[in-house]
Image (cartoon, rainbow, N blue to C red; front, side, top):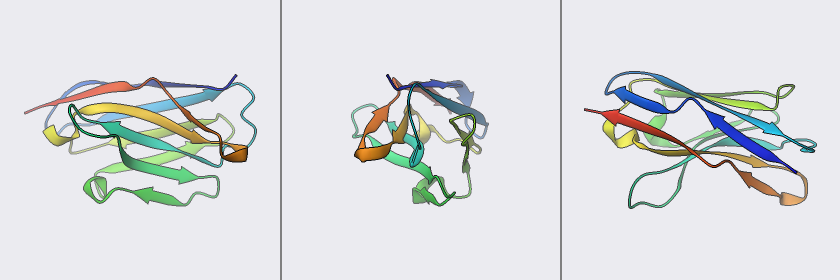
Length: 116
């Protein structure tokens, strides 16, 4: 069974930095896409950034220049380095993976709180 486990959330002051990581385990096969979504209180889940197996990135405009996504295919791990954090970045961050046959998996989420 495929599992995604996030780590690295927490409380940070505005302007600060935080790093998230997510490890996939189980019989994943090729992970075609990995990345991060977030859901703020009272809002829908939204894309933060994803990176496919070839290294192609998709990033939301709101995080460009502040967040950096990367992945290690051998370790089945995706990272999100978040800099210049703002109160609007407060959310639960979910790890996402797209495997063969279009199967999607989600982590349970890690909470990021940015205090102003």
